[in-house]
Length: 241
Image (cartoon, rainbow, N blue to C red):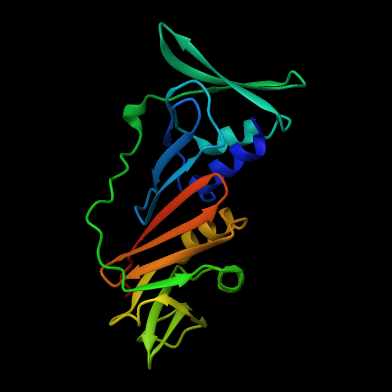
């Protein structure tokens, strides 16, 4: 197994510390997990056919600690499961240079439940997440580090992404037009977490492309075309003051 692929898997759900406690599930040939942030503003589902070890479910309580331990190892690694009376208690990871780390597993009952996303609203627009969009958004968020939200707004037939939008105040903001793949625009503005979208874009920067679908009913959906990975995120709407 390649360490870099496991690190990519982790980064796509951890989102710079947003989701620490998750349940890994493997059938022996693939690895998947669902996550939800502590503030409940983003949830998602990540799976890859590039990773697999002993079939089972493994409760990861502190992903940041695990990432640091994995960083000790060389690129080629193996994962084993340490059991007591048939119950998985820890993961043993080692490389070809004989370095080994042991990561203690948690009780799955202490993890946050990740809700199923069943009743989906109509997504009125779809935006291409190409390299231009990704670079502009990340640079805009870096320029406004204290800005918490981005707003999708359609005016005069044009749809914009606005970082720092406020209808009632004169604010520092970054705005750029986006081309719609589908839809004609939103009939009212919709706002979501700018921090999480930035972290999602950075965690999937190797993607050939992605899409952002937006509803004005309080939900947006982000997906990416990534080799060997299925990546889906749901951003929950934020009401602006």
